[in-house]
Image 1 (cartoon, helix red, strand yellow):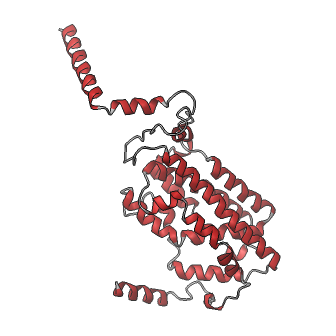
Image 2 (cartoon, rainbow, N blue to C red):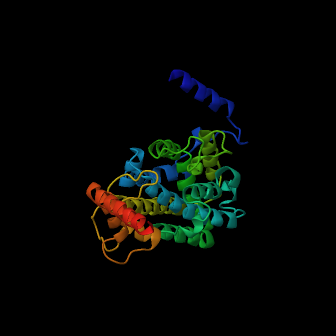
Amino acid sequence: MASDLETSEQLDEAEKNSYGEPEQENHTSPTDLSELLKEGTKESHDRAENTQFVKDFLKGHINKELFKLATTALYFTYSALEEEMDRNKDHPAFAPLYFPMELHRKEALIKDMEYFYGEGWKDQVQCSEATRTYVERIHYVGQNEPELLVAHAYTRYMGDLSGGQVLKKVAQRALKLPNTGEGTQFYLFENVTNAQQFKQFYRARMNALDLDRKTKDKIVEEANKAFEYNMQVFNELDKIGSSLTEEAQDGEVPVHDGKGDLSKCPYYAAKLGAGEGSGCPFHQAVALLRQPSLQLVLAACVALAAGLVAWYIL
């Protein structure tokens, strides 16, 4: 462990100032935007980390279908965020934080979507209600108050460069995903050689923005809203997850456990638009087919049918 720590420290030292600006992390003041955001979002950050979905994820209690839906939510979120960032790349209140090569996640998420859903993935997914609310807010901010994009970029990218790396390892282990990165491209920042150094550089850029205190306070307020939108997405995913009776392994169809409103069957209603009808018949059929007694009856019927066909042909 000591040698690993020493190696990490050596790498950090070798990569210092690799982003072209001096380290300013140790020279912040309480009125710097990075400090205001750090202090002003502590409570929201803690609440987000303690949502049931995140706690279950960190324990490895995540099935593949739910992970796919989480990836879908990220795709729609980052598509909106990066569209607005591109729109405002020359705006003085945001331009210093525009790093498409280093940070943008949409292309990585497209690779993940293709891995999980196949080439026709766009026809198989839709934006969930909670994600749509988040996306609409991002578009509103980008088109009406571009300076507040700082809050959304900070909330998402700084988290991705920190805790996101832990989630990547958990997902690979829990879902038996390839160590080569298929399905977790979202967490891979190929053009960031040292995450800690880049985060410090990014915060220094934030602190250098020419913003008055009123605007900084609005950015902190918007960052708290961004955390709230994320929590709404987490809670939505948790509700979907609670409708599954067991971890769905590769190639296995999850079965509704009978809790909640069976007439809507939330998981398949969200995925396939099949919210009408009674009792989610597809789930019921799969559940019945798994019963050993019914499997024996079906096997006998198949054997009898085969015998009758053979007799008829002869």
